[in-house]
Length: 58
Image (cartoon, rainbow, N blue to C red; front, top):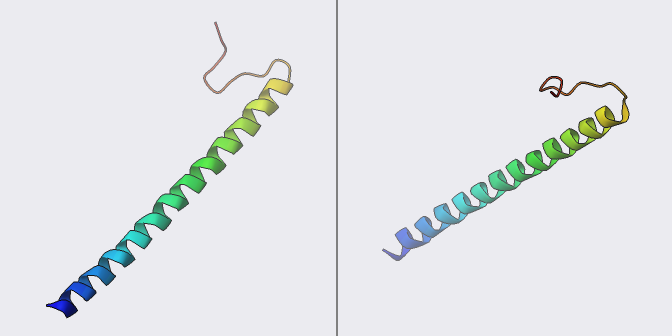
């Protein structure tokens, strides 16, 4: 019984680590996407007469 508990705890620990790194990876990707979006928006704002991807404002 004790060996089963140790094995179960090991598996749960490994699964928690996997989930942690998956969440961290997603958060890092989201930060990169947000940064790229900010850079593109600032570049568009610097160009006179630029049109946003949503189309011309009315």
